[in-house]
Length: 77
Image (tube, rainbow, N blue to C red; front, top):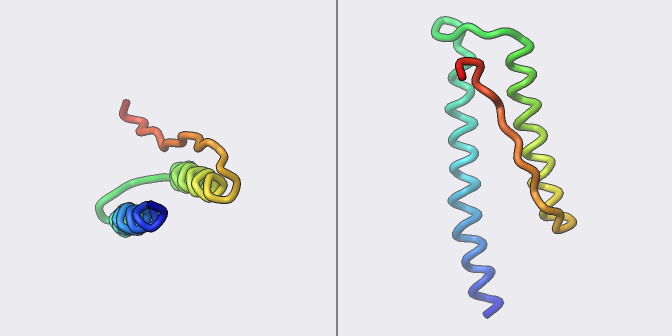
């Protein structure tokens, strides 16, 4: 039973980790000022949301704390 849980963790965690890493790679494409216009404040807000979500995810592994939801809002909405 415990072995099944560990195998499931490795399978699911690998897929989700690779998805996050790929999305970060795609996000870095937004840094191209020939295609996008943004302010330093917008970039700071975006990375603050990412940093907060990462800290929350880490904390859930360290202490079993419930995760808090963070998001970066689109000013177009």
